[in-house]
Length: 386
Image (cartoon, rainbow, N blue to C red):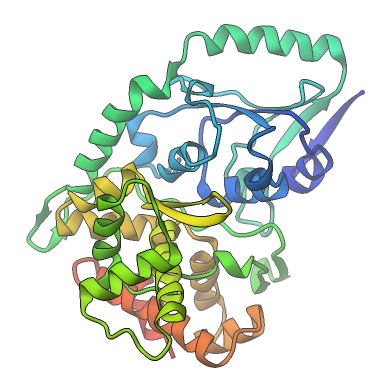
């Protein structure tokens, strides 16, 4: 069968084709938020040992930096998967085809990259994508033959990763001139939003948006002032640390008292601060020997060696790649008298100390970034933290 697939690709094709053994992703551009939703849909975290994933991206340095077409963190996401074969990740700098193949049986060739705008449609500002899907053996075999010709010409991750990471670090360490970063020729793309958004149109203008996100992808509850210490401890412990061990070492390093219930406090503190590092792609969390363990990744090591301005640029880029932040910014543009606390209560059911901690953590982070980068989005975000 051959059929036409219209936007959104996620709802109209991916949800109906869950891989059992193999997944091929050919996408020039890839964003972390879109990839996260696909991996969650396919339950990759629990199935990584029996699911073979093959990835081909465009992968030129400008895609990761000035154009913001691809999030560098997607590489670390694949590297962080247990049993992922690094030879199955390649780049080709003149790649333009977008194709997805499930179990060698179901093929989608489409205009949509694995990005929010390519996979999801939620308002008139997103891309209108289309694609052709088929399960006909003869067509799929022709695709596989053609893809193999492309694949052998690509560079493996082992070849280009170190050079790409070095160039990315140089980009993050761009000097500031007269208090402002040197202007880039390519502006940041507009924020993109989730597949579950709803919108109403009045005289051609969007007047309301209802956005639904996973609460675990919302906002970090850690604090920026502990991020470097967390990463340094993880760097000194390459075999990884449990929640309790990280909390114990970190509390001791920064001089926090143990409290009445030291073990409980260590677990809670270690989990919060470790997940904060994971949220920004600087560490990974993996189940080892039946327990959750934090490991620093190459991004984390890179981050520790950046200048302060480079660290801020990295965190800002990561912050603006988060769907929840983009949702908040869009609400500020469209809703009079926007109130963040009320938004989080209504959207996620958050209340009490959890709500306060999330608001305070975001405010702490935005203040840190705003010290050298006074963009309108950040200024408005800070002003709305009530």
